[in-house]
Length: 489
Image (cartoon, rainbow, N blue to C red):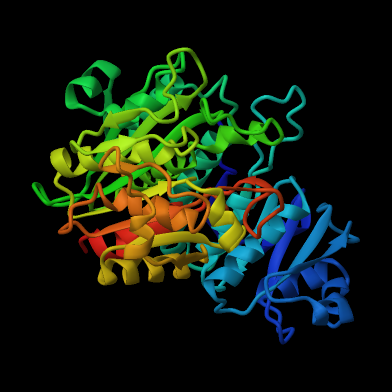
């Protein structure tokens, strides 16, 4: 598992700068006004900092970007990095500044934030952009050096940085899970990694196949019956709120590998289906973050872990199964399997956990990528107040999300004469008909949001806070949703 890049918060000490090795970064306001730290570095570098701040390169740099002075004369440091940043930057700019510093070098860093506000957001961006998944590489490269964050009031900033580290631990837990190959992250191994959250105070329960069969969770079980890996449902309970208070339920699709089953996917690109457990990965990361920061809220997470494989025992197109709710489902396409898993887990959550509200996440449809690309997740809600709360949380964290509609015409697409419902409505509006399917398994009185993260869970290009690959999208937004709507002061 990937370790977080270490950050310590200290009182600003300008006397150590001349002999400090590695890199020294300092924040400089866009108008070129230099802080005491910048002025000290300017004297040590014989005026090089002032010349750089007055240069065209600094003028053209955007807020959050940095220019570097390599091997400054008279100093032990290999570089001085001048971060163009207002004293009171916006959150996204502060995080981007930290990320840009992370991209400059893997060496140890002294970061002179001094009186700059949002130092914790700079730290968060730096940690998240330092991520590299190298568990299966022989040459793992040089480890990232530690970061010393120097500020004028460490007693105020240190707790904020601890919270940032907790959030980063959740995002990185998600990235690691999504990055793992399916021969490593089996359903059994996934359950074991989630069980380890008990060390943080999370109550973890693993429900095995025999118990799910007793409960009538045949929609979930039909997905995994062609695999040698047993289906599992893992329930994680964080009880940081008032005793007896109804929890927020987070539900995640955990298909550790998706061949499509009998409705076999094309070979090209199938290797990416190791990320089809992305919804469960996000849910796990949120629980890690909440527990690490000791959130004052009750949150229960439930994930259905399965592998979708073709086999003589596998579910066939045309089979009809009975869900835990009791509704019958005609399986038109075995590659529309995630909604079958979620249907039973959603119903279990309502019947056994009595949630105040529910959010489910899934890499559910390729149609969502066609509709929204890799910039936004698509989401649906049956409750306008809950929708607005999530929309605000996602926007505050810079995690793109776009609400899509329900409608009677879409619901009609999943009608069938042979059962109560069928698991796909065909190609038109595929993301919406998948949501309409899930809506059947949500009680009218339960506020609910369904988030399709197919386009944002793993991407082929770098993002501002992550290298290409698994993003951890959703951990920050859902943590913010918990803090804003469910956490007690």
